[in-house]
Image 1 (cartoon, helix red, strand yellow):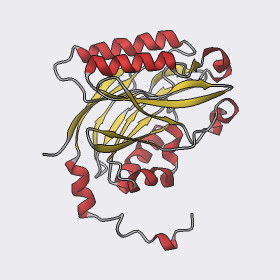
Image 2 (cartoon, one colour):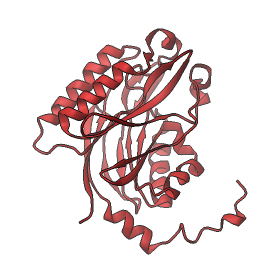
Image 3 (cartoon, helix red, strand yellow):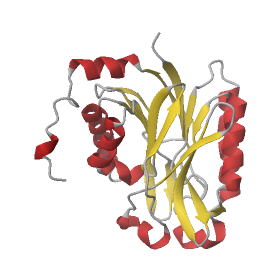
Image 4 (tube, helix red, strand yellow):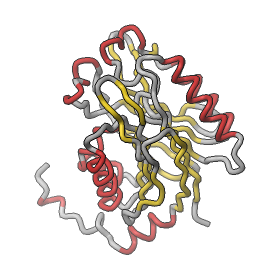
Length: 266
């Protein structure tokens, strides 16, 4: 029997530079899921859901070793009996701050982490954040999945490394603003088609700094079909993933077997 998962994307408005208010918001949205008739198997949060892009104050508000965020995310996983791909938070380690995802299993145990590899110069991330150095790959119920953060989706060679290691579902956490909504949708659809995987992407809404964020959290199947999409409002976007679709698509169009890597000068 093929693996099937219900996913829930917490498309939230994020209070600028107010970590405690944002932790409270996450708890409220998780409680809404807990009261639902059908519980999710996987919950995904947006990028920097604790601080938003209050980069100038990270020295003051970043989470030391992510301890406060880990508490919220572990509690959420246990409350729902779900895997939690914890968006990302401003994680302080020593003198550095990273844009980091934490991943928890259904029992609330942390099973992985990922720090954003590609920093977005347009928002001056490189001035305030340290770069990650490794992929975010995990196993959920025996199936390989992975996660990246926002700007990472503009690097198809990075996402391809996940696919080559068997990733069937790619989780994307973002704070993607207007006027680039069209880029958001098209890049995610392209990453799904070319890698023959599900792409599950959670964006934020609201305003922060000088940006307005476009929402439209989205779930794309391995054929590139959009199976769920939010609007530009705070909401929980849900969808069902059938991992047999990944196997079917990869069997029908064997792009990985047909690669000619000897000709690729990367």
